[in-house]
Image (cartoon, rainbow, N blue to C red; front, side, top):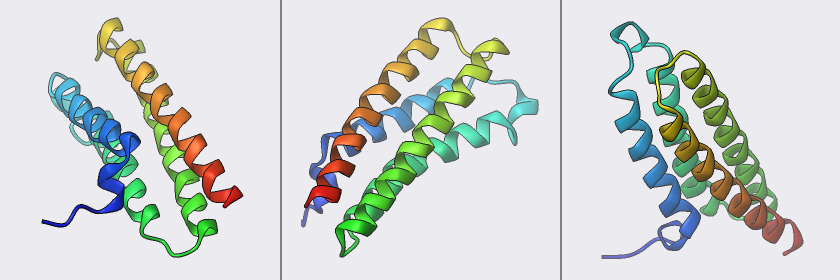
Length: 120
């Protein structure tokens, strides 16, 4: 079976793990948040890995760089939603810190990847 280039990226692997964690954390959210923060956080976390995959398929480095900017923005959007979730006591301090560390790692790698595409 063929392995695509995005599947080899550590940042993509981390983003898949983050999405899995977000799905697990949001299972405990109140039922009335099903179409609110639960849905938002899940879609946002999936968007990170999806845009990494889509971005690596682009032909020009300018397009690739643009997609990495979208990924970075989605990661910060997810962090904002995690902050709100913590303030509302939907997630524990421990889970919040875990999300924050994962987002920090992903955004650092995305910045490096974006710079690579810009400078290539």
